[in-house]
Length: 377
Image 1 (cartoon, rainbow, N blue to C red):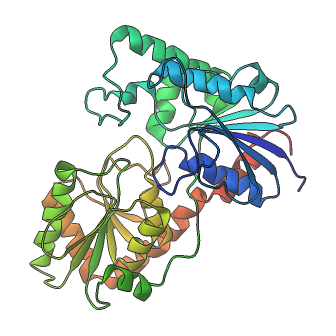
Image 2: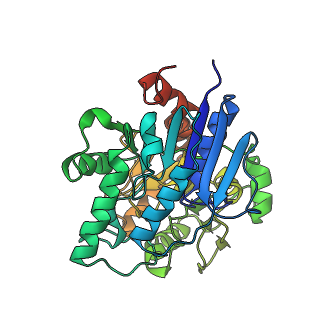
């Protein structure tokens, strides 16, 4: 396959945090580089940030604008990124799509953007959980400006990718993106090094080999007591049936309870090690897109309990144990069922590995290439 020149625009520098807003962009860059493409990533940052993946050239630029911390400031950063696109770039990839156009330099080639959130997600419209941005709630006039800037980012894209059917429908109905420009594309999640064996992972967690172990997966932002409460209560109910059971809570600042092990790290390695040790996982319903921690659980072949609001991007539910609600009783019943039935865990685990494969960056890139989103081969 011919070597191509790919420019990626990321939200920030490389990070060990699996949930960093820039994580999927760097995962894609690494995937392009592994195919032999010439890859450059422009991002707001500075020299001396964490090293870029092998084969990827990092191009940081100052993250200072006249409107720091606002949507207008983010749009100004988008223009700065656009000025750093290479004239020879054959494809531009922007992840997340963000707000504001990159500029006229982007318009001469295919531009693929990945929508991770929409302006209306930022301050939590009725019935939704607000995305943590640190901004004050938007007033009517500010919302109009922000939506206009987001429309500008979408307008210059030749292909608009999103991870969930909810986002796809909103992009079509609320933002006027034509259906032929929309793609339902999984989140790119780095594969990383091979995770440890089950036995080695349990040594890291100080958990015996012969006890049932569940893991509570991280959320986009570290989960507070209110969000964790149903999962913790569900586990304590399950312990009445399985007294030796343990629970590992990953990526939370605090979690207390009998036989509860806290692992506050949110890195790829930490989450991968936790799910490698687990017999079952619990995904908490939060956020507006597919959870990368859930992807790692599926990759590890772990039977995962999930409420209805956990979205798999239209890939189907056959590999997870759905519960009707996040109620502690429902989750406890599902956990007890999985702990008691090794055959069911194996069956779900085999399906899970298949379901996780589209989230591999190389698989996603190949899918976009075949689909024509990256221009002619």
